[in-house]
Length: 444
Image (cartoon, rainbow, N blue to C red; front, side, top):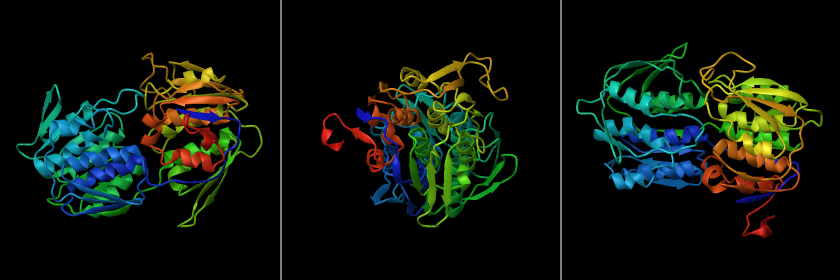
C-alpha cells in the first residue's frame, strides 16, 4: 500500500530509460546468439528480473552493471518444468522464448502465463504460427511442450490483427528458420523496429516493406549484439499526464519526440504545453499545465502510428479536468476501462458504452464490450481507497490520487507498478509528491 496526500502539483525532473516493451524482448533475442550480448539503458523493473530468471534457468550467464546488461548464451541448456514454473503467472514473456529455444535446443516449454487482465490476449496465435514453422505442440497439465523434430522452416503468414506479440514471435522464430518468411499485417511499433535493429546487428536479414509487410530471410547463425534500448514512451507519457492532471511541470529526461508525435498532438489538443530539448545526452521533453482551462477531445486508440492503448488511462485522468465532454474509444483491448470504476468513486464523471463512439466502428463493436468512455469535466477528485487492477491503470490511479484533495490509500503497488516503472517512488518524491508507506511515515 502507498499513502498519497494529494493536491500538490508535480514539479521537477525524472529520467526514463529503455522501454519495458523492448528490453524484455531484446533479452530473449540474446538467446539466439552464439556470443555474448550487451544491452544498455536497462530499467530496474520487475519484468527485467523475471526474464533474467528465465534466461538463467536456461543456462544464460546474466550480469547487470548499473543500467548495462551482459548476457552470455554460449551454454544454453534445457530447464526443468519446476524451474520454469517458478516464473509462471508473473509474465507473458515465456511464450517468446519458444522460437529461440527450438533453434538452440530443439525443444521448449511454456508455463501458465500471467500479465495484466486488460482483455483477451490468447497464446493460440503464437502456437498457430509456431506450428506453421514446423513446431510440434503438446499441451499438458503442467503447461505446453514444444519440439521441432524436422527443424523450423520459413512461412507466409498474415495476422488477423497487427498484434505486437505475434509480430515479435514471428521475428524471433523466422530469423533462423530455413528459407524466407513473409509476415503480412505486422505490427510496426517503435519497439518492433528497435527489435529488428537488434536482430539485424546479430546478423539477421530483415526487410520492412510498405503496407505492414516484413520479409525475413533465415540465416544459419546469429552472433551477440551491443545495443542501447530506445526510451520508454509509455512512461514518458505517464509523467506528462501527471504534470497536466496536477497542474505541474515535469521535465522527462530521455523522452524523444519522434516516437511520441501522436501523444504530443493529443497533449497539445487538450491544452497542455511542452518543449522539446534535442540535446543528444541531456535532452528530453518538458511537459506542463499552462494555467488555462483544459479542452475536451474525442480520441480513439489504435495500433502505431495511432494513439497507443497504453497512453489511454493517464490521458483519461487528465480529461476529468477538461471543460466539457470528452470521448475515448478503445479499439485495441476490449476490457481496458475497468479502472474507471475507481475514478468514479473519486468523483469523476465517466460513463461506459458498448457502442463505438467518436470514431470508426472497431472489432469490439456489437459484441457487448464496454469499450467507449464519455468523460464529463471538470470534476473535483477526492481521496479514496484504490485497488490497482493492472500496470498502466495503476499508474493512472496514482495520478488521480495526486490530483485529488485529501489522502488516498493505493493498494497493489508492488504487484503491478514495479513491473514497468523504475524507482517510481523516488521519482515521485523528487517531484514533490507527498507519499509514504504505512510503516515508514518519516518518508512523507
